[in-house]
Amino acid sequence: MSSKDLIITLPHPHLYQKSRKVGLITDELRRVIDNMKAATLDWEASRPHEVGVALAAIQIDQPYKVIIIRNNFDNKRDRSFSVFINPQIVKTEGEISEDYEGCLSVKDIYGKVPRRSKVRLRAMDEHGRIVRVKAEGFLARVIQHEIDHLSGQVFVDHIKVKTGAFYKLAPDGKLSPIDYEQIQKSHIFRT
Image 1 (tube, rainbow, N blue to C red):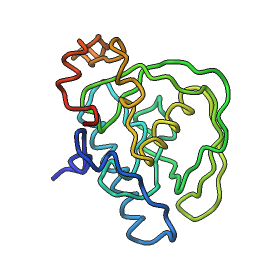
Image 2: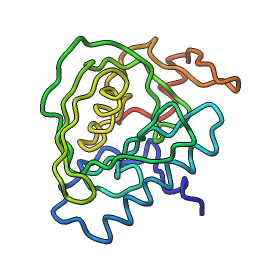
Image 3: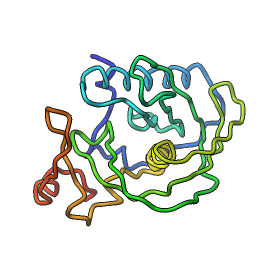
């Protein structure tokens, strides 16, 4: 089994579970984090037009409040990640704007999702130190997307009634709209 096979996809019911707070950073948790990184990079290696940007532990069926975020979104050779344990968005600000989002747990479907343009994050790193991050733009979007996973939400939950919000990645790497009836038949919405 390759590492990317650890990633669960919709309609897997665990993606709708709330993750639990981490009390201690144990060897088991470190293995989960290593598996998250390996799964993200393995997934990316199989996708020529996509970058593995981030992952929540629940996406590998581990219900911990842990997310990893790529340190450099624009350089696939930089395979490093920041780890955020028990992350909380402590402030959102800025305008709400729509942009494209994909998800390793939502196979081959993208959506135009509304998100705040700025957030402030508080978490622990993998060494137990408190970290604070002020993010805007794409990083703010990624943080909100991953935090949603920890509360059992997936990006499609935000746009499920927007008939023109769904897209598919073509073999040439371009996004094209998907017919809403096709989306409804894809089993990505909660029942």
